Length: 354
Image (cartoon, rainbow, N blue to C red; front, side):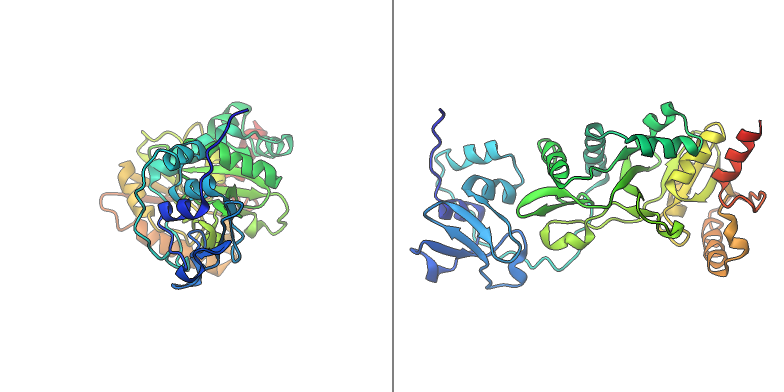
């Protein structure tokens, strides 16, 4: 059986740069500032370091573990790497710094990092039969379903922790919307449903939307994968990113609301280029995306409820004015039978009628 070198928990805490309560040094329970929840202010010492068992636990956020996992979680490295660092003979200690209270929203990591994490995450997931049936019912083929990368959210907490552990072996999860730490261990937030990758003009995954299983209100059926409400435990907010789908070399782009709607409409329209907002009011970055695509024509294909809902109509008018600020751009509106709310529904009806 392998023999492991004992690593004093206070030594590991010093190597992490944690602030210790000097009055408790020499006791069995040494107090320190928690690096995971920020202790809600300077001079707070909610992290308890047990010098007999060489373990830690935060009495505020519940983070816990041993000397190795403390160092690994603070430095965002694997446990094996942490053990090597702690037993490598170095007596260098990080300068103690009081952790900042985690009362500010963490901003998402760079796009290339988000794309790498989400791509690997999707590689470990599968698509449940019920979710596949839902996508087929929208008109998508199995080949396109696989190509677009839809996958089901893990339902059990143990599966979510395992997923985070697998992805974290290669990537830093700090700054990735949806991931956060629970009792010091990384996991994934979000309701049950299936994931919809939201891609930029180059096909990189910016974020994820979830098509919820349990929500009956159509206007609340989709939610961004986010751990915004977990910001005290390393969670990260999401933004409403603009989704691009279809043949990106085309000079005509259709404009609609909803990443999944755009995916379906593009497929049913033989690869037409679609630019999709996350919501009728979520137009931040829309003009820049259209400009970067280099199209010379935009065709508005927003939902037909604009005819009966003045709030939707006003939002679409605001969006239209924003897009029409682009020079040398032809802007037209695509209309269809209002019996079909979305452009995807209308295109599917045409395919079914053939």
